[in-house]
Structure formats: C-alpha cells, structure tokens
Length: 302
Image (cartoon, rainbow, N blue to C red; front, side, top):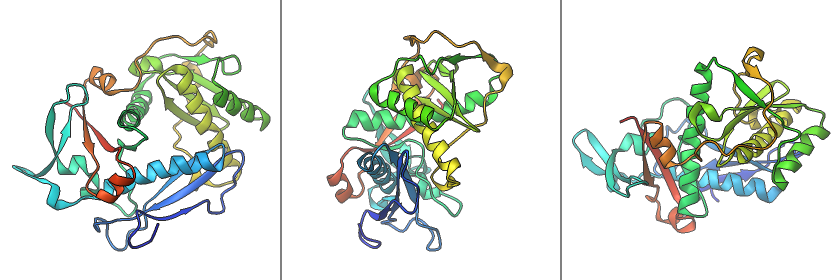
C-alpha cells in the first residue's frame, strides 16, 4: 500500500462510528494515469459485523476497482472502431471482442469522482467473482424496473421469516436499536429473488440466490443505512431508493420463503434479454498475482 507504487493509496476506518457495523474505506491507485491529475482519489467503502469482515469486503471491492483502472493500452486489440478487449460468453464459453470503452469504462469516465463500474468484481474464485458481477447488474436492473412499476408488491413477514444465523443476528440488531423494518418481495419484477427493505426513512434493495439470501443482504444494508443516518454520516451510507408507496403494498406473504425466481446469474441476464460477457481484469500482473479472480461483467442489449 503506497500512494505511488501500491495497489491501494490507503486503508482506513476514518472517524466513522464502528457500531453496530464496522466500516472501512480504501483509496484506489491510478496505475496508468487514466484520471485527470486534479481528480480526487477514487474510494470504495466496505462494512461488516466485525473489523475482519469489513476489511475483507472493502479489499475485494478495492482490488476490483483498481483493476478497472489498470488499462495497458499495449494489450488492447485494434478494432475498426478503435480498440477492443477479448471477453467470453460465460454460458457458451465463446470468446468475443468487446469495445475497449465497454470493457474499461475508465477510458471514457467523465466527472470529477471516479467510481468503479457496475460489474467490476473480485472473489475467492472465478465463479464467485462472476456471480458478484452479474449480481451488480441485476441490482441495477431491479432498481430501474421498480421505478417504473406501479402494481402491487407483497410485504414480507420480517419477524417470522426464516433466516440463517448471520441474517437473524442482523434482524435482532435492528430490533434492539428500535427501528422497525418493512420488507417487500420484488421477485416478480425480474423473476430473480429480490426484496426491498425500509428502515426508518431509508429503503434499500437486494438480490440474492434465494429470497432468504436477498432479505439477509437487505438487512445488512438496512442496518448500515440506519447507522449512517443516526450518526449523520452519509459518506458511509449504502445506496438507497425511494420508498414503496403505501398504495402498492399488499398483505404480508406467508413467512416460509417460496422457491420462485432464478438466482442472479449469466443465464438470468440472458433470460432478461441481455448478453453477458466477462472480461478478465489482468492488465496488471501484480494485481492478478495477488488475486487472479478479477473480472468486469458487461451486458449487451442484443
């Protein structure tokens, strides 16, 4: 970690409150100078129930963000419209060239603050990195669909919903801070397990491999949203969306989760009419040596 030669510029908890969730921030290096010299250091934030969880989350996000900036122009392919990078179809395995500006959005990034693009992901395996990249795209599509949706949305019985040990702990923490949580099943919007969770004035969205997993993720983000709002620290708050109007709510579903919806995956994106393509973010050999499972998932509307 070094401001000139390291993968990260810094790793810090800042002065953020560390209860009920630990929160950590990492600054990303710009190894090939893609960003203007006056641009602020790009940052990512991670959180968890303890320091190790928070640091693991932020380091994965930081490595993916760093790799999205590590673009070696010598490795790009000549293309009739400029340059391209090889990607592959995760379903068929077929290789295909992708325009460089889609594979590496940092090449055409505008504005003063760079944020890692949707689909930039890291994981302890190729499958987990791919799953995280596709999950990010599904979350964006879910938010877009919800903004246009005017039909009824069933509430979930948050107190009675069966959860794993970690998610149940998050549910108890929300109860202990006295913040009621209201959840809605959004699985029907994309046929992907998904939900919205309103905690006080904040509403967060989550998708998952199952509705149980999605609700657990929503509880995680909802607790962080409460923490950021209560401590007046919007700089560590998760992404939130407008709340679901009361007229769209229907009665709570039975507490037992239904096995409906396809987990967020390349096949789920294909079913929604998109073509997912995976690009290995391996232009920096040192970053790839530390963690080889760095990817950029892009979706093509073909």
